[in-house]
Every structure is written in structure tokens, then in C-alpha cells.
Image (cartoon, rainbow, N blue to C red; front, top):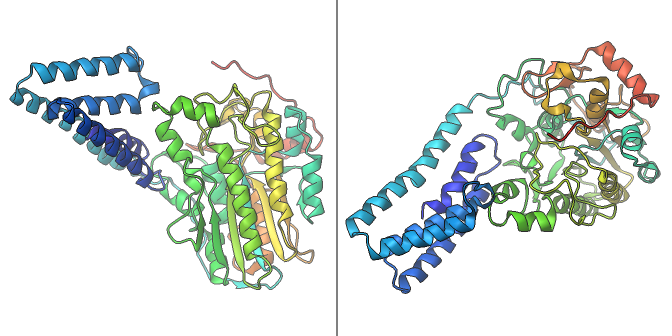
Amino acid sequence: MVSSLYRPLIFWANNAWNISSPLKPLAVGAAALALGLSAWWLLTKLGIRSIPAALGVGGSLLVLFHWQNIEVLTPFLWLGLLAVVVWVSHKLASKKALEAIAIVVIAVLGVSPIAQLVAGHIRQAQPYQLVPLADRAAATPTGAVEDLVLVVIDSYPAPAIAETWFGHKAEALHDSLTDNGMVVHAVGLSQHTFTILAVPSILELQPIAGEGSAGSRGNRRRLREIMGGDSLTRRSLESAGFRYTHVEGGVDGTSCGSDVDVCVNSPWMDERAWKLLQLSVLGPYLNDRDGSWGLAASIAAANNVTRVLEDVQGNGVHDYVFAHIILPHPPTVADSECGRLAASPSSGAAQIGIEADSRPDDRFEGQLACADRLITQVAAALEPSTAIVIASDHGTGFNGQVSTSPDTWSDSDIVERFGILLAHRMPKECPEPVAATNIDVMRAVLACTVDMNMPARQPRFLIGLVDPEWVDPSRMDLIRERLEDGDIPRPEQPDAD
């Protein structure tokens, strides 16, 4: 039943170097194989010859896997045609003709995806070019911090943007964080515009790409390894005796690496499974039930972080906890209570990915409120001896700027994407961050936690993923001032097409 593995292998081929593990797609293929073999056995028991039964079942599996993507005729007509083919083959075709057809089908459906998989690995082999990363030198604990927590909140905008652009007043979140001893930065900034660069940069304590240095989207495995645990932050803390707990948030790029101490898995329906199954016959059911995988994964991540904090804090053992919460990243599927919105207009066939974005709709404010609930839950679980950074990787992309050339970005485009939620807590005797960026805050909190050699600070801001460009420093200073003054209006939303 080569058709059962066709879609999983093609999915793997399209993400050759950029998938944490092919095991889940292959497991889906194995489940389809078991279903197909059962259907084939039943047909043979009903008197259908072996090869016509196999052709019918295999063709049906292909239709079911590509249900949402069949534009010629309809899936039901294709299934009807397959039934006719099975009946005609069973009644009229000779054994040799059936064997020849089976060989052709196996060659096309079996060899083709394997060839594409090999070609994908060759075509996408060029690694994404990074700046030189800091050496993983030994560090020692300062004694000021028992445990360190980093929680990345995906796409949460700066509070001023949340209020003036999306009508979301975050006073309750601000009060909750400050009540728990946290500093909430009025104007927090990221230094990258995509998760795949922003999160590794936080963990490496420096922007990890330079202007025009990327060259290719191809092999981003090193970026995923950093996000999965092989980072300067983790290695420094590990050398200082910190145990590492990695809480997955469903994004494939932030899955646990191979050598984390404790991995807390996201729900089975994560980014990988969603993208694999969304075009299948299950797609409408998944969209109607969940809207996206992000809501359930975010709730699970917040619950898991809370549980981990209850387990590791105050026991005299050093722990480092990393977590990624995908909300409030669009599409808009959550209400303010973190319930599933009915008939969410922005969900449909939308996908969330570390490079994907979509325009928030007029109900996005409720999803921000849901994210507030999850953040507040985590903050409430903190004990005094724990240092924490809560930071967004980047802001929203309401104006569609993330898919345009960096030289077309307006001031509003820049401030929206770079402006982020940013908060931290550490002992008062520790020096405060030199600037309110997610990297600088992480540098300060880590320096309070361990004695280590920091990489050179790079204060600049980079737009884009492929051939990125630096923002002129003087322009960024003016934009920062305008954001502090609330003087950057929300641009008109462009037409959807």
C-alpha cells in the first residue's frame, strides 16, 4: 500500500531539513496503511480480486489524504471513478495486465516520493548562514538565583500597540506581573522579525543573523537545534549545574532537542500533525473543532509550565525551564476566556507556523485577553527564588509587511513587528538590562544567575529572513520615541487579495 506513505513522504520531502522528526508523519502513514490493509482484506473476502482491491483502496487513500486539494471534479466523484475502475478491473482485466498496472502504480507512488525526499535533502542542504556563535565556556552559579525561567509568548505586541491598535487594555496583566515582582517594560523590542531567528537570538544572547547573510531558506536545522536546547543559555546553565526542562508549545521548531534533561511534550495535534492532516478528509472537522492547533497547545503549555514550576522550585536544586506559548499568534480562534470561538472568520484553512502570519481580525483583542490569562497563570506560580523572563519573539504583522521587502516597511510596519510584550524579574541587587529588548533582558537575567563570558552586544534590528536588512539606528531611535509617545497610528488594513 505505497499510497498510504505517499503524502507523509512528500510532506517530509517538502520540509527535508526543517522538521524536528519524521516519526509523526510516518506514524500517520502507518495508521493509513493499517486502515488500507483492513479495507483490502475485507474486499478480498467479498470476492474482489487482490490487485483490483489494492488499486481501489490505494486510490481511495490518496483521495482521502488530498481531500481539500482536489480541484478537478470532486473527491466524491473520484471515489466513484475508483469504484468503477475496481469493478472493471475485477471483471475484465487479465492477470498480466493487472500486474503491469500494479508495477506502474508502485513505481509512481513508491519511488517518486522517495526520489523527491532525496532531492529535497540535496536541494535544501545549504545551511542558513549565521554569525559566529559564542563559545560554550563553563559558567558558575552566582548564588543570587535558584531557578531561571524563560517563557516566549508568540506575536504579543507592545502594550501601547495592543491598546491603540487592537483595543486591548492590559492593565490586569500589568498588575498581575508587577504584583509578582516583575518589571514590565512599556516599550519592549525584539531585534528580529521572525520566530526562527528571534528565539535563537534570545537564547544565544545576540542577533544570530546579519544583513544579507541568509542566502537561502534551505537548511535551518542549526536554528532548530538552538531552540531545542543546544544554545549558549542552556549550555552555560548546564555547566553551572542547572537541570533543563523544555516545555513544548506545539511549534515544530521549538520541539525538544535530543539531549534535554526533561521534555514536556505538546499535544499530539501540533503544527506538524495539523499541516499534514489539514488537506485531508479530516481537515473540515479539525477546522470546525479547533480552528487551529494553537489554542489547545497554548493551554497545555501554560498548564505544563505551571506544573513544572510547582515541582522544581524551592527544592535547593538549580533548574532552567524554557517554554513557548504560541498564542496570541493569529489566526483568531480564542475568546477572552480561552474558549473556542464559534465560526471564527480568520481560521478556516489557516495555518500557524514559525514563518507564517495572518492579519488579526476585529476579535483579536479577545485572543490577547486569553494570552493574558495564560501568562498570569504562569506568573502566579513563581516563588521568590526564581528569576524569569517573559518575552514575545516579535509583534503582529497586521499590515502584511512580513511578506514584503524590508525597504518597503513604513515606521508603523517596523514598530508593530518589533514592538513586543517584555517583562522580567530578578534580585534587586542585579544590574538592570541596558536596553528594553528581549535579548538584553535575557542577557541581564542570565548574568544575574551565572558568571559567564557574554558575547559582544549587538544593538541593531534586522528585518526579514531571506536577505535581511538592518534598520537604520537613527530611524529606530525616532520610532522608539514615537512609540513611547503613542504617536504611531495603525495603518489602514490592505485588501485581503
